[in-house]
Length: 63
Image (tube, rainbow, N blue to C red):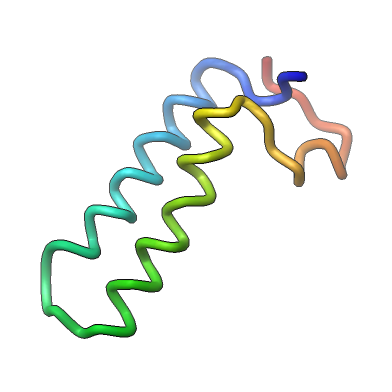
């Protein structure tokens, strides 16, 4: 079951990795950096699994 296409997938993976990398750079404020890491997991996971629950909810497909 795939609803995330090639370009969309690559952009999600890059965005997810970027957000996760914010945990390790910048001011080491405990709460803020950890939040960006958790937020980054969502686009990374949807990119890796080629499935986005929000796309399914709205009936969208980019593959």
